[in-house]
Every structure is written in C-alpha cells, then in structure tokens.
Length: 101
Picture 1 (cartoon, rainbow, N blue to C red):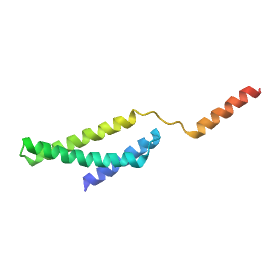
Picture 2: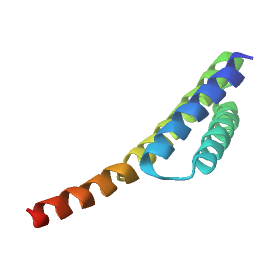
Picture 3: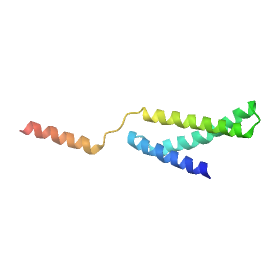
Picture 4: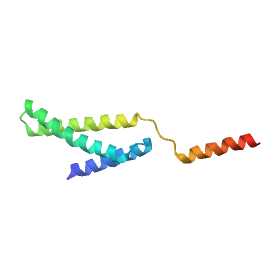
C-alpha cells in the first residue's frame, strides 16, 4: 500500500517537472511507473541469483528502482525549460513600444 502511494507521488512530481520542461506529462508519468516497477522486479531477480535472503532481495529491488527513477529525473531535468507564452507576448509588445518613441 505504501509503495503505491510512493509511486503516485513520484509520478505527480515527474509530471510537474515535465510540464515545466514542455514535455508530455503522461509519457513521463508512464516512464516513471514502469521504471519503478521494472527496476524493483529486476533488482529482486538479479539479487536472487546471488543471495537467498528475502530482505536483501527486496532492498536490492528498491535500490535499482530508485536508481532508475533518479536517472529518469536527471534525464528530464537536463532538458531546457519552456518560456511561458505570456512572457513572449509581453516582450514583443515592449519591443514595439521602444520603436514608436
């Protein structure tokens, strides 16, 4: 139950960042959810090949899921911000006023 709440929180956070960057929010939310679940399962399976302790397997799953989330977040953060349309329109008006004076 707590993990579902965590995934929802991470997806909302990623969606907010995607909107700031001008990227499709739904796509990045999907990447986040699939990356977390896939990373967790992958980490558990990889850990099971080397260790038989269930707690260590689960912790390795969380570790890989966290690493994938951080890589996705860094990938999105590296994209340039999108300027709001309103600022662009105001700049055009300011340029026209300086030429009329």
